[in-house]
Length: 329
Image (cartoon, rainbow, N blue to C red; front, side, top):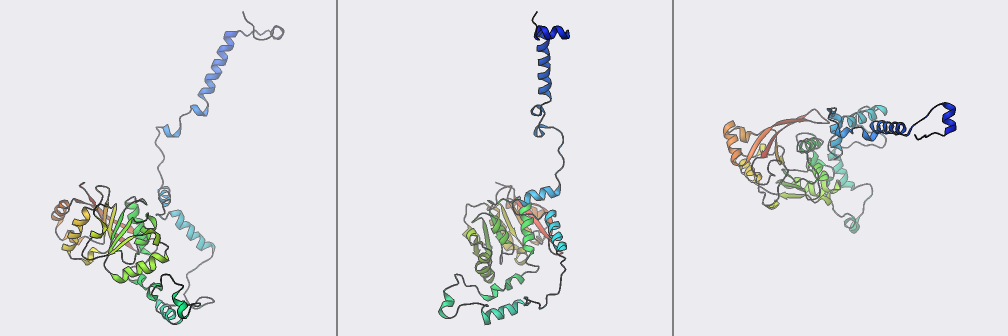
C-alpha cells in the first residue's frame, strides 16, 4: 500500500495517509471552493427576486441626462445656493453699478446713444453682420404673451416628457410666435428637426433676427414658415412627425378651419406612436357633442387619448393639454 508521507515522519507521528483518502480530501476541498466562490453565485441580473422600486428622483435624473427635466435635487441645490449666499429679493432701485431701466428706457437709450462704445459714419455699417432692430434687442416681444416668457420651458418639458421625445424626433409647432417654446425644442433636437407654421410677421422677425442668433441656434436650421389658413404644403409630403402641438392657437380659429387643419395633420403624424397636443380647450370638438366628435375624429384616423395638466416651475400656473394620436397606419 502506497505511503505519501516519508517513513520516518509517519512512523514518528503514527499517521499513515493512503492515496485514496488523499484523493477524496482534495476532491471535497475543490467542491467546497467552487460552491463558495463569487463567480459561482447568481448575478443580480439573473435573480428572480422582485427589484426595488425606482424612485421618482431617479427617474427624473435619468431623463435629465437628455437635458429635459429639472429634478428635485436641482431645485434643492439652487435653494441651497440662495441660502448659502444670504440672498433676499430686494426692490430694484438705482445702486452702485446698476441703473434699472424699463424696456422703453432701454430702447430710448439705444436709439440716442447706440451703446457705450460704437462705430460712427461709414464704419457703423461694417462691423455688425446681422443688425437687429432696437425693439427686438430690448426684448419687447417677450411681453407679447399672457404669461411670463419662462413658461415656454414648462411647455417644452411637459411635451417632451409626455412623448418620450428623442433628439432625432420630428416636431411641428402650429403658431410658434417668437419661439418662446420653440427655442427649447430647437436646442434639444437635431438640426432641421423642428418645423413651425406662423402667420404673424413681427413674431417671425423676432424669431429670425433676435432669438435664433442670440441663443446661438442658427446652425440648427429650423424650418419656420410664414403661412395662413393651416397650409402645410411647404413642409413636404413624405415627412411624418413624432409630435405636433398647438399652444393657445386653435382658440383663435373658427371650428371649420381647425377641422381642415386636423385633416391635413392626421396624414403627417406618425401612426400610433406620434402625438398631437392641443392646449387650453378643444371646443372645436366639444361643441359637436361627444359622440359626433369621436366619429369626426375617427373619420380622420385620429383618436382622443385624454386631458392632462402640468405645473409651472417658476410661477403659480398650470396649463391644460389634450392628447390625440393617429390610430390608423
